[in-house]
Image (cartoon, rainbow, N blue to C red; front, side, top):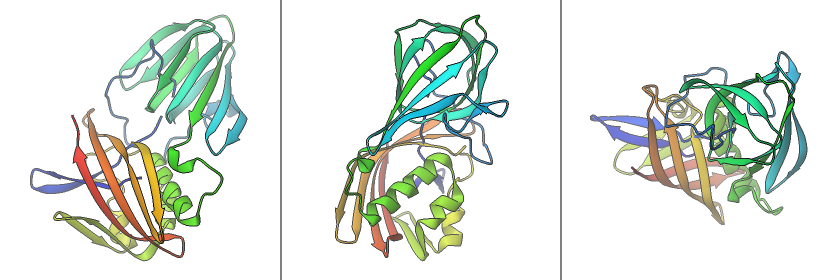
Length: 264
């Protein structure tokens, strides 16, 4: 992901952007932040209900992942997050949704569809009398498309995915021990230990929504361009666009220069 440092009140805050699910027209989420969750929340496939899976993988390739999620009456989906996705209702039903906005019930009609840029967290429960079934299509970021993924691009993609999940071990595994992170004129971090302190800075909730629009490689330099939506603990979001320049060594990130701008 993109490490984001913002100058706030004279101090530096590192923000992260996240990732998403189930956000439909009737399930639309407003800009509220997820609570701090440690360990990180599971995604839609990993989460289940009372120890049993509710989603199954139908297909996965470098461009997308397709899931089918099935909810008999009184079966739900424990707290999880969603990446960017498109959903189609194979069999409708009445669902109770719990998220940062509270609790509500929605009726989803068979044949309807929905889409989302990502959901920080929610829980759902089938409170109707029929089995509800959803098809979920999760497009991969442009950087993950194609089969000729280089080791350097794979490392950057794994790094971004680590930030989407706030998975500290995954993030640090993508870095050299002498890593440097620079935000010109504002910030300079050296070494994994210092880097780790800024994975989730004070005031932020982790699991940002990160969208990579372009990933370009030239020699041992990878450039990632995209946007970040970082949830804060006060219930608001910080929205940014970024351009990250990664200097690579032996398939790991040894220097990162981040250029970013807050958007309204």
